[in-house]
Amino acid sequence: MNLMQDESAKAPPLEGLAVLAIDLQPVFLEVVDDSNNFFKSCRFLFETVELLGLPLYLTEQVPAKLGHTDDRLLDIAESAPVYAKDSFSALGAPGLADSFSTIGAEHLILAGVETSICVYLTALEALSLGKDVTILSDCVSCRRPSDGDWALRKLAVAGCHVLPLESVFYGIIGGADHPCFREFSKLTRQRDRD
Image (cartoon, rainbow, N blue to C red):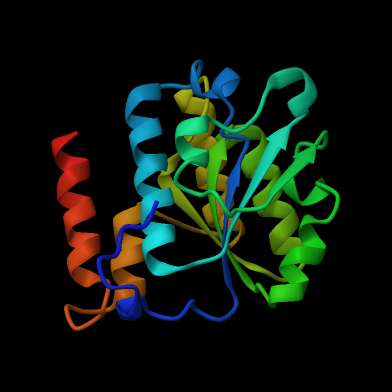
């Protein structure tokens, strides 16, 4: 899905940054807290990543048994590589850490499920590898909200940045003179209407 009218206006990707969406499979999306709003936030994230031309990586927990990433999200991120895993940390997915090394990703932006399990363990492993980690607080969810809240508190103490998507991406855009500012503003207004 191309959200830009003028492809030449797309800003170059930020060096050293990668977005990782963890296990956004229907089997999980259907059981997490406030699943409808969570899905809308993830869709907004995928649209934003596509708009800004940032590298996006997807993981799937045991897809042969649990299914693949939600098709509605895959339609937005058609070129995002998908990594199957059976570990709870996404960095245990064969080839994923190598892909991050190849592009020089030193800062990971995390989204996905479950906050208290796979997101938590991925963030801790990334920190142990010397990566900077930002967790999008409105793009992570789990079955029991209190578990997720405690996990995010612990991750913040451990050194992760825990912020909502708009705070992070308005920070990346930096100002109204950014070539993607108007399109991003449209996406935020559309999100508010949905």
